[in-house]
Length: 110
Image (tube, rainbow, N blue to C red):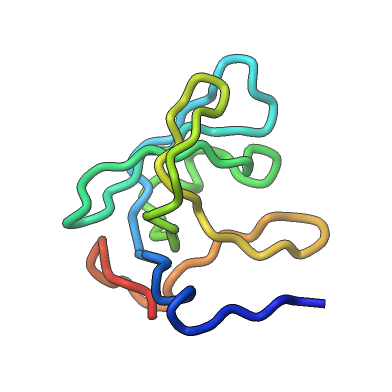
């Protein structure tokens, strides 16, 4: 069962579109990539994303993704992750969410 959130809780989330600029392996991390994002007016952001089993770096660079920008920063394998990429769990893979058309980096998801 899913729990409900009220509108104020939802509106507190800062969900944006960002473009992946760089993807690096993290030493000692089997599942994580260090990903550099262009988040428009928010500037460049870094996230550690557990998508290594599902994507090669070259298929990620230049891709627009949906990004939770105001998630509290967390240190993962020595990388300060400044948010989270949003993905659907197909049961077999993590499928990154992306806009259906190109939009400016930093565009808010509503």
